[in-house]
Image (cartoon, rainbow over all chains, first blue to last red; front, side):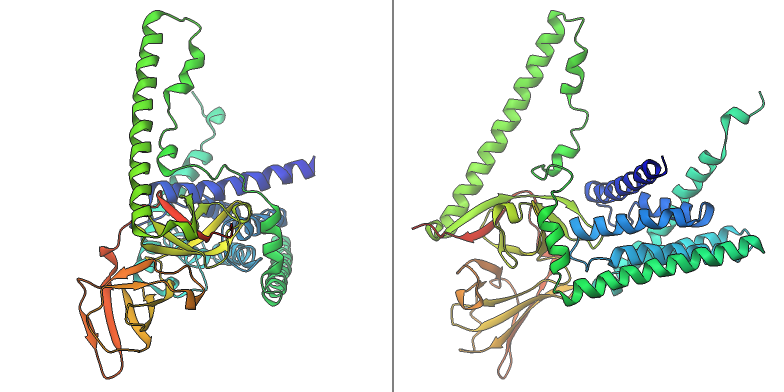
Length: 156
Length: 267
């Protein structure tokens, strides 16, 4: 059962990663990117941080490096894990604060989108990431509110 | 206190796996990416790669609803037939366009020496590189050139997977390709993110009367495919250097009608 649950989580996150690539290919927005996979990562690192997710992000990273990119194998896995550790470390050691959440989210996106090419230092790309962080943080808040509301527990 | 200890223990395990990822990276790097290539060669892509961009947007195709026709009546059948005919008409127009494009391509280069494999971009990765259909299964090789329907070089193959490949297009920041003009001057065409730089690496004849920069067999490329046109560009001729800058925004091409050029090995 544990293995099945693990496999299901891996498939879910791999699918999220694929959806992220697909959405950004179809819509191809100039000013921002939609990042459902990163939002999932932020939720994991801030609300459900545990060892259980290591294998999931390790496999998701290897999947990405093997099938979608010319990166060195293991680069994305390391990047995903570092991003999760970083975001959890900041959030866990501070008081609950929206501005800090947003700042952590933004820096997390910059780590998440890091590539070893000159394009990473392109001001237009950095600006696009900044806008993306605002848009995706907004999406995260909406999702968080929706998940947080348990309809069954509501008093009529 | 207990939570703090648990978190520290989690961090330690995370760091161990980060180091594990780094060790895979080192292994892959020093094996000249042999490890990732082996996996790429053996694993098929998880979605069909022969899909065009516009197909994604046709999710709500009327075919989805045809199974509902248990209450078949004449009107719905006729409606479906009309829709089918419209689709056929669109398909016919697309085929006509493709035929014209192929005719243009045949006119612009000598087609007997080369094989043109039609491909199209179907997804963009996180590094803003497009993946196109066709890979090891279609015998693509690294640095194979990619041309558009007019015969102009628009990119080259960077990494090959089992049935798809990563392409570096002319508008990508790390695009860099050597070329030759009709006077025998050798050039390097580079994209620096803001504009396309064209400058000589070896000069044979100093002149500003340059129209096209071509691919050449001396660079292990299929010969005489135009890369850029300098006919309307400002060309600077210095002491021993010819250079020009082109605006990236002037370059536009379709990601769906592109061809990979392979040398025809058949007698």
